[in-house]
Image 1 (cartoon, rainbow over the protein chains, first blue to last red):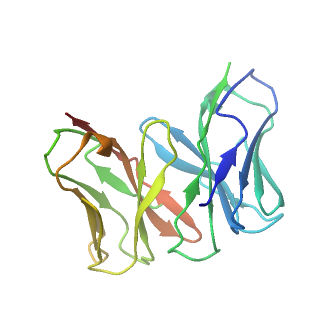
Image 2 (cartoon, rainbow over the protein chains, first blue to last red):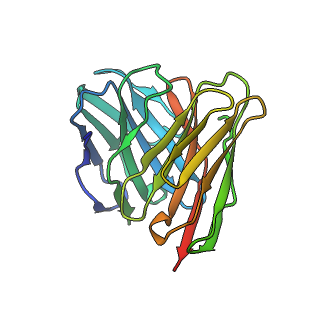
Length: 115
Length: 110
């Protein structure tokens, strides 16, 4: 079974702090994604990556950056956390770039609260 | 952003009732339509990936149909059970990424 793990289930940070959210997948997937989920807005894509050191902006990249130094690990970075970044963050992975048929496998999510 | 819309937003049914939801998506440049189930406190899990117009897929009591020409997909649940309670998400594939709808939240009461 594919496993996608995220470093924390719950996280509380203060405004202005630098926040790292880590995601690891164990099935050699090429693609990795970061989403945030807010009530009434569904899953919105922040950034994705289809290869090591490659990154692509999603629909809401402002205020975030990402890092993919190893194939299995994709990190989401909030350079200076703000209260409007309080949300549920979900990481996902899928097998091959450009393959519309590949389902995405999701991690358990990190609920981040910024005070 | 190409909009994916789902209806209804939420649904409450009695155990044993059959139900269905709708997902509408842009019909031009279609590649694939995904359905996911997201249970509370768990991760979203794929139900179906559909690529061909007229596709019909089934998994137990859950089935889905696809009309790519008019841009919609239906998800059906026959004889709903309390364990079917979840948010059902559809997503349209577009250039290496999925565009998700806001989901239909289903609650099945015993």
